[in-house]
Image 1 (tube, rainbow, N blue to C red):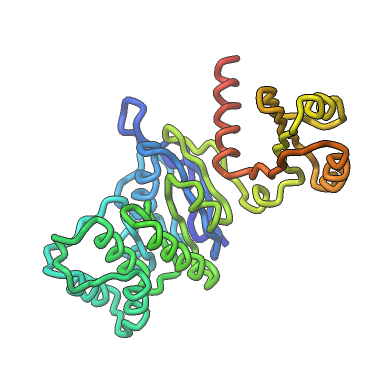
Image 2 (cartoon, rainbow, N blue to C red):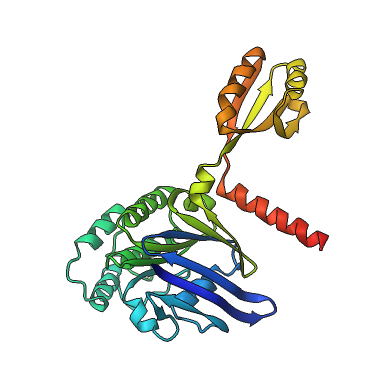
Length: 303
């Protein structure tokens, strides 16, 4: 069952700005990452999803309700962190969290207090004088404390230091395990790799690929970088029947691509060589998307 459905979404601001023909479905309990550079269309897509802006064309549905027509109703069932945080005119973080609890008719604040502790937030601080990181923590607690079934998070780790970023990502993993449906944007690939089921790449307002993270993590082949202690061994190895994807003669170094079932054979063959080191070159989400963008760039050149 699709919790979120984006169908042919276009929001055209003119001069090539906006998002165009966005199609994406998110099933109940699925965590989807949304990655792209600043200005690529992440926030416009998310604001359309929340019903804050009216699409030029297309539709967005949350739990079967059209977002633009039912924004108020939808917001009651979503934990939302905006890309740009603007608090109401309230004196402290505590006052803001209390106002959010009243909006959601939340009586039990035990989970909110737990989040405050884990994120090392002092909500008694003056809201306007909070640092960017403290404001971000306050927004995160406000989004999560209602235990909503759907979480929409626009660059949620902005302003967090590395330790707090890790703490937040652990919280999100726990939310995911509880069956929450999560849509999270970021420009940091490692955040997506560690948490998501699928990741959509948006560039210039278009989704150009949706990667299955299981497929990325469990590729049938791997790359290994090998450096030899002698030029002779380096040249001798190159004559063997291995697929070399990178050759760095100045270092007597090669990178080979090999099927997982043949890894033992590679290590066995290398016993006959004087190897300085061998290391696996991890295939990352960032590398996957870079390859796709390079292919598209080449295709455009050939048109």
